[in-house]
Length: 128
Image 1 (cartoon, helix red, strand yellow):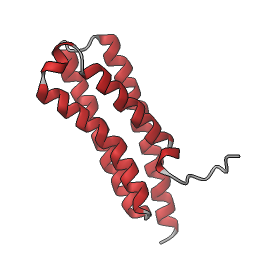
Image 2 (cartoon, helix red, strand yellow; image 1 turned 60 degrees about the vertical axis):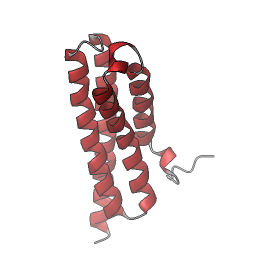
Image 3 (cartoon, one colour; image 1 turned 120 degrees about the vertical axis):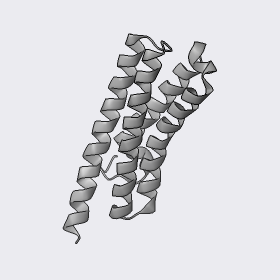
């Protein structure tokens, strides 16, 4: 039975969404012209991986301060990824439907990270 307690980073909804986003970014960037633009392809992939990696690393560090800082970095990587999606759209590597789908998932991921960051910050302030 679930206890409601988060025991591992894989339990975090924000990490789960970041994983889904990364999977979709990899799927889209391995086809067509996008696959041949090595620079943008690798940059957007790195940004997506950075989101989920920073959530995981921050969680595993154990302290609220460190976790909070890693969530700040993850949120920044989310913004970077969203900006790169505009580049991909403008370069016509993805169509508007794909852009809207990925951007929507990225926004949802950013919101979840933001909410988690606020909760961690609140806990951090309580213990001071």
